[in-house]
Length: 198
Image (cartoon, rainbow, N blue to C red; front, top):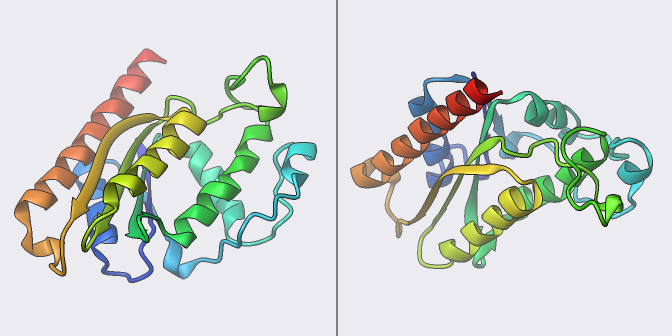
């Protein structure tokens, strides 16, 4: 079983990234980790090149290998810090660019009466969502992650970690780390269950 862990914090040891890594380690699965701080994912331009060219995005950057990693992973963990009561710009760029996957001819048709909305190759793939904030707004950021991953990509949410941590370090917050570990174990269970039913 292979898990793709996407650390959306721009600081290597950000609280969000720590929770992503904690959940990933607790899953006990083989891991691939992507640190958005170390890659270049440019904003989507809305050109719809992907729609007309079998899901191939026209932008040549580090999102290109990530498409295949998303398709090949048995489960995904994605974490975003909460900025201005929403996901970060880096994570939003990744989400926007993931649209290209809809046009690769893989997965169930999302809306039979609207075929231009494509297919969903990540449908039913288990995902854990994580966000942290110093003060408030993490609920709204989590709602955005949930909408994009579940409502749009049709993934199965195995766990959610949404924590307001003040100016503290999650390494000093055992209850928060326990929730991240529980989410990682739930992800592994969901991946196993999905594999057994396929």
